Image 1 (cartoon, rainbow, N blue to C red):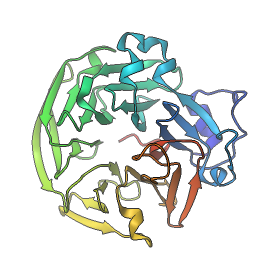
Image 2: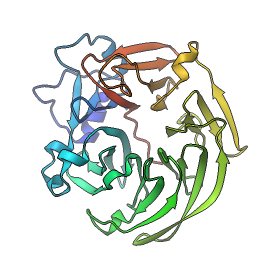
Image 3: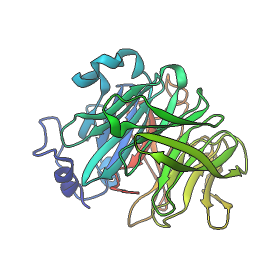
Image 4: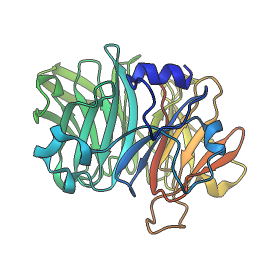
Length: 318
């Protein structure tokens, strides 16, 4: 889908006064801790033309600080250090899935800007979130050391949940082919089976695979090879094949680019990888202002930002 078509599917209508003209290409969504916002940016090709620092080529943005329907969850605290942004399509509607280290988790209807579901997890440090086909929401929290499956289908503030302990839980992904919920922690990749009912879910371990090295961080679907996953660790990037239970290392021309990857994903159609990793150039030691592309290699610099994760805004329905 081109960016113009994407704008229609997002329900954005005509571009706002601050939006730049859009041309075809896959959009990129970033989590900017500097502005405490999720920013939907123009395609990688259009980002190459951006020279800043006047303004970013923002197509659409969202922040809990501006969401009136989240006031009861005190986003001034809970929305500190936002750290995740995903696109999911369920029931023909596109949702932004987002978390913040301050504790807030939210699923936002991009057509209306309204919140489908949200919760404050306190000091658990949520790092990733997934929306299941039944409307429930899975959350991975690193400090909490757990994966929770919230019965979000019960209502927009439902806190009923199932829990599975996972040390250093950082990433969570639903696999619609196997109907398993995958989660990555410090030392293992775990597949969870969802049981019970949507109103009272249950999580049980189906299988657990040790990581090839410690420090599991991001977990994302390989769009070019459905069923496989990208897995980043502290030192390297891997592709995991559940069928064979094997991790295969993904090598970049610059080995340093493989370290401490916060987010990874392949562009639909081209297979080009987009990664975000700390550039150690700003006040935020875990953030970056540089988006890295691989195959073909390249970089997009977003001056003035403190990006934690960057993903293709793909309409992956899982």
